[in-house]
Image (cartoon, rainbow, N blue to C red; front, side, top):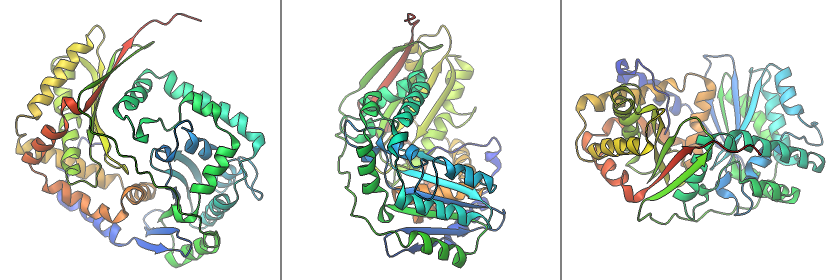
Length: 441
């Protein structure tokens, strides 16, 4: 789970976690008759309200040959309804002093707006309208397809490290849909039809496959009444298809080499790991911080500061996912350094992590960093709503209460255990970016 670490986190005492527990105890959980769950968290510290609609559909729910469908549909949801013209949604929200956007991931698609208490009803009406009445107009289909193809070119094909992550992920997963990029493969995007979008919309954009999160300065009875009046009349849809594919255990190291025009070599390691529903997730979170949580971390000290082999390093545990995930290590190789030398240095450091207990001081520092990020990440109403939505999307919002307690219980022996079990060369995929000078077409 990625958190942003603060340089002063070593000084954060345990009492900072108290607001988190208080907030979760104040969440109101309401289920409408059509199966739409509504999660409400009143917080009157800031005069704004964040309203989010989470659909339980992402690239994980797509079929082979139809990758990118969820992301494409996200774009098309801004093309209007019989009541609201194309691109009017964002203009209406902005005109009323709000901010809005959307994003698609492997596990969900989210639409959100932040507005004043007096204006938030506008966003509620707009979202209910497009849940039920999106036109997905054919005249906008082909132009938007070109927009998405260009987005893919800019963000992936012209971005060497993103391109490496995409191909490495496609090799790390052999059968699970996490192997597909969220934006989709270029050939798949080209082949998508308006009928594909309409079918995807009808299947997954139904109240019983969605939930709403509202956080901020509002009255619960008042906003719940608005939600029931707008969303409550949308009929329940058929039950959505379940994804039952399980990734087969990896039984040997896999390697990917990508030769692409780039400034510097780049290394990427994907280790298969459980998601945050597994008890090992707490230790894996802390392991990522011990390895790369700031300039005092092991990877930074070893590769960047002392040996000067890398310009930057990172370790990340993507635990907030519906299905088992990966633990990653990355390194931006220094100019004139051999990626193989950097890989050997990383392997040596990982071997020590798998053989020796970390110190109690190092463990406490990592816990303080994680706790500080978790607490300060909920400073804004948007951050609070996002955290609730992330947990609800993959396992249920009530698990928020167990996170910090789970982190505090981790011992040095627990970190040694997960390092031994999961940072195993037989369960990893190594991606290497080799810079080349491409010939001009």
